[in-house]
Image 1: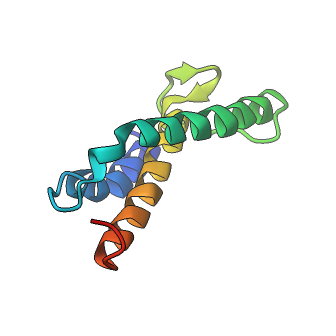
Image 2: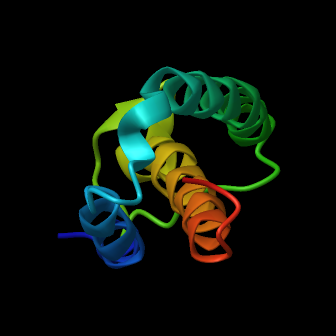
Length: 102
C-alpha cells in the first residue's frame, strides 16, 4: 500500500467510524455533504489536473499507486474526498458538542 493511501486511511478512519454515532446524526444531511464534496473535488481536482499538466508539481511514483484518473494518482483524487469529509465532520461534531445542533 502506498504511503499516501496510508495517510488518507489514518486521517479518515476515526471521523468515518464516529460519523455513525446515532445522537450526532451526521448522515441526516447526506445530500449536502455529497454536493460539498463534489464541488471541492471539481474545483481543486481541476486545479491539480492543470498544475500537473503544466508540470508545476508532480507526484513521486514511489509514494503513490500507478493507477491514475486524468493523470492524477487515485490517492490525490481521494484526498479531495477524505480530507474535506474529515473537516466537515469535525465542524458538525463540534457544533453537536457545543449544544448548537440537535
